[in-house]
Length: 283
Image (cartoon, rainbow, N blue to C red; front, top):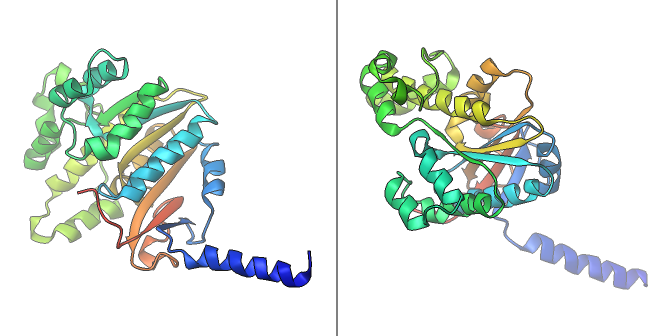
């Protein structure tokens, strides 16, 4: 092949590659671009992954599915999610084992409004591949109790009710930056009890992740990014109980310019999926 033809072909390739608008770019914790392939290679070596999503972002949900599918070809997986509450585990298990239909699951479990579009594909992936799927979140009625009256209100619950949350008393550090930031974000609507309600969710999700984790498996957990960003939230509770496991975090962020990670997003996670802010949402 002549040098002229080679240069022409390289020119066309460059035009195609750089002429297309990308929907997302992946960065490491230091803000350096990394490839999807490199991310998968590193994640495949971990014990537990926390995938922090933007709840209504289609790119984040698509990558959750793609990442799960690819890691399934490399490792034995256990899946879990914030979006299904612990007292709905029986209904979820019945659906996974074909004892009930989707319509029955939707009727008997408290599914999120966007479940069908955003979470059903991952749950169905687990069903098709006979993977465990763990409902990790505290039932919302108990989180509301904490929001109104603090942790002490949980002491009056029955033993049956307490099995759907992290063991009491709940360890809590109000000085963690992300918890303190909740008060700043919420302004006059913020309260110490609001932060504790966030903490009981984080603690409960960590509890059920570890309760269901098995050695030689990879546990992938899907949660809102605030629950694991900056290595706090769920991860803080996980490391309190099991420091020896190898954890990784992913965070989805939204920016107008996806080609340079904004300062506030650097360090948010081990891998940061930067999505174009013009991306349409699922709700």
